[in-house]
Length: 331
Image (cartoon, rainbow, N blue to C red; front, top):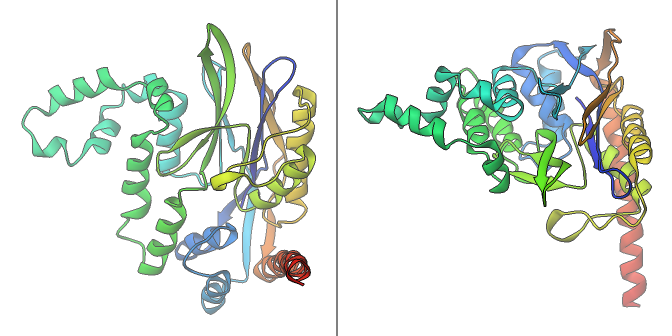
């Protein structure tokens, strides 16, 4: 139900541009939210799109109400930014605190205890362990190790182990939140490198994995945004799920153009994606280009199905073309 995209420059002043749409679900039947959100994500999940749509049909869900909301957060010191995929819940808020405001996180004893359970309840000197954890925790070290275990723990607690969810919901959410290729967040911050302050772009996964990226997208409209960015950058899929090297020069203005065009391209192909805003991070801090547009809109499940059919038909056309090339090669 969203699209977020990020791109780092490769010439001129080092900068990172992150953009997002503003659409989010206002209300629907709570038991259907998980199925709907996950069906919109074009990723390899165990429950197929058609199964999910039939699930909604049987419950009489034919429309979803959406509104507009900000999906790009900025840190209080103005030196970091985080884009999320539009799901506002305790997990998302706590992840934001860990990544954007680590000092505040270290003051939140209840949250830390929640993350450390059941370790804390199994030992006598829990307060000593709490102090030791605070002394050890370093977000920069976590980034260097490409893993933030606290993020994975949050999703385990709040999203996967929820006892209120029926088995189908739990199955779909587990498959979404712990798919190792996709991320839930796009993050940019200033990293000290060779005595210089350099803005860097990162993918942050619900598994806790955090990897530096040159460009990336996420959300239900992420696949289309990625196609648009690849076309602009002259790139394509790389080795082991990565991306091939950018062959063109990308300065800040070009990065803004590519990111915003990718969001617009995705918005035009996904009924649930609306609006646009973006931020630019340089060594001097953040420059925000936020929108205060507020409106509500209705998305028909039937339209979502038709949009998916169009995308699948395009995919089939591409596969037929590739098959033809293979057949030609064999002959």
